[in-house]
Length: 468
Image (cartoon, helix red, strand yellow):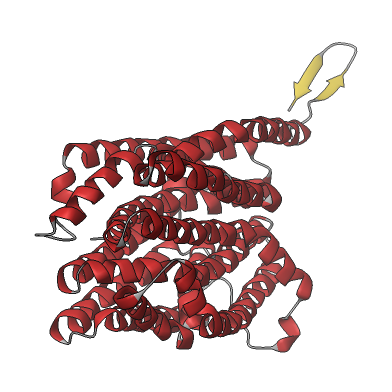
């Protein structure tokens, strides 16, 4: 597919400016989602339901590392776009270099955390026997490659906000293609189980990081990477983390919710239910990544317009992104409910119990995806306009509101209550967020009024003329 997109889009053409970023962002996330699904297909067909259960038990821990990369990438990326809107290249350079320093520091902490606490976290999810050993085999690889996982998440976001979204997309496509090829080699030809699946991911991420680093030292980059302690600034690091913290909490939320689901399914069901949840998780992840691409494509232009105080353009961009994510969510729900068997057979065949439970998961767990899309757009919007606290509030609320549903519903209706917890809690969350949205509309309206051009009136005895 062609991923070459003009870099000379006029920011005043709002829809064109949005799609300049959204198309590469969606394409990259689509490829990323496809490679994760193909990862699940390889595991489901060549390792079995224990492999699916093992990788799903490991995912909450790995997701935390990815969340750190998202925090740094989204936080620094938003500040990078705002500084470019302000025409401040020195500030842009400082933001980039402090982002890289944060990646190094946090990846070391993540590696140590996994080394000492991974097994305990798996046991908390009631992992046992074969699925426990498979999960540990998967996680062990990330102890040594935490930096590459973190950096491979952040660097494409930084490149995108450096006014080169097509290059960011091409990097992610390359990494995904390498991952798929290595999955075939290390799972099918040389059966290394989940350890092989993790190695495939790590090697592809290493390639993305190396090429991304080369970009920021090349003539194609607008912001240059500088290896010097003189550029390290604690205040800049704090701003990056504060603005991107909601992205970390979003991933921590996913980690926590997946872990709690795994625990509940093991208590009220069995490893088959965890494997079914893994299949539903692959489908949901596909939606989440594309929805994130739709919302993420909105972030650079909205940050740019916010720097320019062009409020009307911000409104147009946000409305467009919301329409796109809602249409996509509705289409996916329709397809899943009309053709569930065709989708599920991609991940397994001949396991009737697994397929039956996954079918229930599609009906009960995925019916309210449109609300997930709206929550994504709201979270990214607040981050894009330097309202990190509000973005963080949404992410934390999204996590906390799940708890009563996940704890109470299984007690009342068993396993089906676990499947229903997320969509019902999302309905509640959207109702609770409405006041925040209305207050934000008032805030940006006030900014718009303050930056309207003032009419200057010139009067003479004969005529009166008005100039805007």
